[in-house]
Length: 127
Image (tube, rainbow, N blue to C red):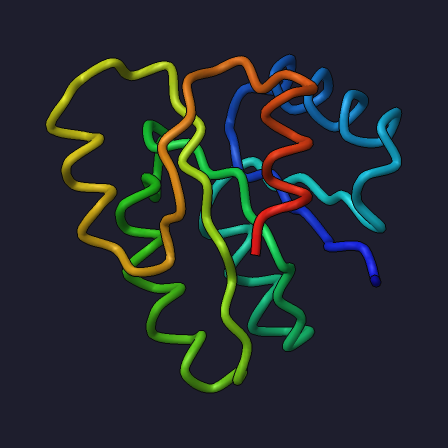
């Protein structure tokens, strides 16, 4: 079974680094990329036509937050013929964020930061 590609979209460089290192140590995914915001990720997707299998998405980011990113991703996903599975990874404990995340078909789950090895295994094995 081919491994999934996982991308991180988060404006926190420490979280990004730690999560990327953890993912790379596990060998659960074939590729890991990180983007500091939704604009950067969308620019990459639109220029390459390349969508990953999984995205770990932060909600609270400057410029383009996670919700705006999700709205744009749904728009470009139609042209890419590929479905991306999103895991919202947030330090927010607000129940309204969890409820809002359920309104997006592409959001599989709402995870609390930090992401640990157990959560990564579940993501890697999920359909």
